[in-house]
Length: 173
Image 1: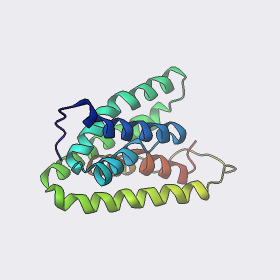
Image 2: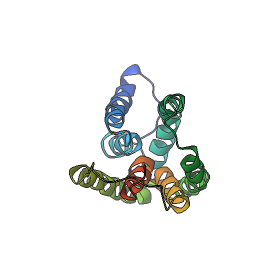
Image 3: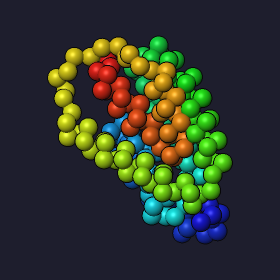
Image 4: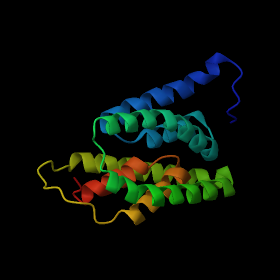
């Protein structure tokens, strides 16, 4: 399927996918990429490369607005941000390179398996969440940023579920 849209009606599945994904992301604080990528690849039929590129373009605005809001409300640990950002960018570039270097028919089963595993993991974490844990500083950040960036770019989503969930496992404040 091409992302070439000829009529206004052809954009409806993309708007619906984005609306549903942003609704979930707004409630959880993560999973826009995972939800929208799953919908676009599995239901709408977009190939993983186009889905990933489209999602990341949209995320410039959605996560950009969220990031600005958090920064304005002084809700950002800038040291943690710096320790995740550089490895995350490197991982993202590597993930995008890998995804763009392989055939979409080869990538699709791997991307769908990855997205399904992330979805199951998110449900598990939601069911077993312990809100009484004491928080500490993150111990593992650079490898986490690298892996999160790679999986997010290669899978069309996953930074939040991989990085945020791992920071929660580390009891990060």
